[in-house]
Image (cartoon, rainbow, N blue to C red; front, top):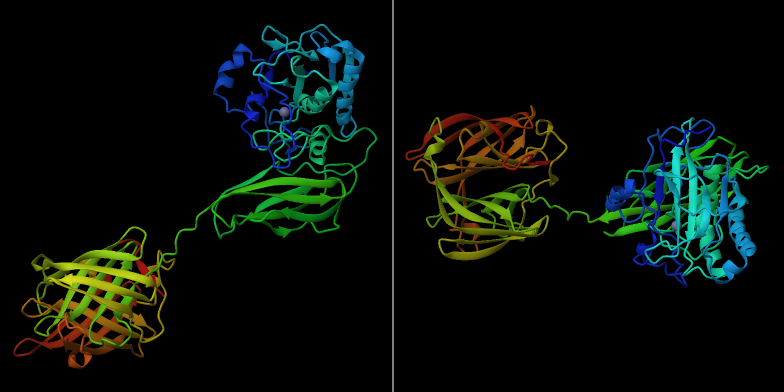
Length: 631
Ligand SMILES: [Zn+2]
């Protein structure tokens, strides 16, 4: 019938020594006596066992695991070998009374009856057959030429490791491809299992192993145990134990019922960010029984998880072979390991699925400070300002102000985020370079001199402070966003392709940096662009010009170019009434798309003033890809 001799496998449960490190369930009133231990280690398996994790170690026989053998379901319970293995003709066992202690040794028939009664708890609820074949002198765990002797024996031996019992099970592959059990031996410690009560408390659980069940990840079942759960103190089967046996052996003879074997034994959602939902996991409910099954309620015991959809309506009847499905999502509320239990109530009893997820902290909100800023409160020091190009953890700031002789002057700073704060620190530079009249502009002629340090600290997305020390003068200003229209929302890693962007806010420069040293900032709100142009005067000093450019009928932006003078940056308070504005020309911005623009300007400049007209090709300045886009 079966090709059993050539290949066999043993799985032992080394659960005893580790049971003591399991946290007992709060409801437990006593530690369950340790029932099993790794004991029989064939030489062949020693290296495997030595390297195995503390609980389960299996030697699986190669076999397609995802294809259900004809006529059997592919259950999802926890089985001894992972791949379900079963006794096709029932488990025939014998009792070896040698070394039985005390009254258990003195009344053999009562001891056999007690063991058989425990076996009957299983045969009463599922299709497994456990047949007593009488006493034997065969020693449990006898191995012949490296193979099990094929005689399943319950007997008395010290399992070692200071524990009270051990079950060893061997499996092989049958001719039809099924994984089948060929030998199950239970050894009981004569030193500790000394009374009928103690024997009763361990043997029903051992029978579960002997017929092929592993430890259940569901808590408080007869087969609960490491690694997922703590041992229970039960001696009788719970619905979960019954289900495990039925998924392996089907129903008892002459019983017609519906039952489910399609559920996962447990569900781990892995790492999920706090405040977000995991990908929904679909659970399929299939009636693997022989009679119809009626769906009851779906219950969630514990927060952090929910049913996100259900096709298994209350009261729905599933005929044998019929299915419905629902989905579960994990939504951890805290950054901890979270557990819960989904309960699927049916006319055949409750089905429990342990759920788990590791909540991971949400990243702190990343504020973006891209835009033009001026003194706070708004309009309190009109005449000077800052433009901030904020990309990733870097702010490129351009400060538009005035020098001691009231001439417009700009300073720049590349400021880096301080840790994870919303404070950015950098060095302030004053640059000199070729005047805006020079063509072509030679970037190698630009000279940058450090004149101080600066710090930008933000309390929120719209308010902050600008602290600086320039030429020994230390001051601090409260700043707020410059708003003259609807403020756009600026984001890092915007899903929008910059070419497709219709808001042009940001720093731009000539043809991807071929004229590094001067630039222009567009503050774009509604149909208006406030242009801040940082360039150089005819004497090479850092000069800035500005324009309020309005959208024209054909989509271009047009405005007057204004030259400004004002009180020195160090004036406290800053007397805005002393700022003068002179129109010295005009500009037109023509945007081919969100990342390419033509900048045409005509200005009167120099002494005596002469007219300069140029057209520049601009692209966005990206110094921390993918930069920032506003919309
Ligand atoms: Zn166990």
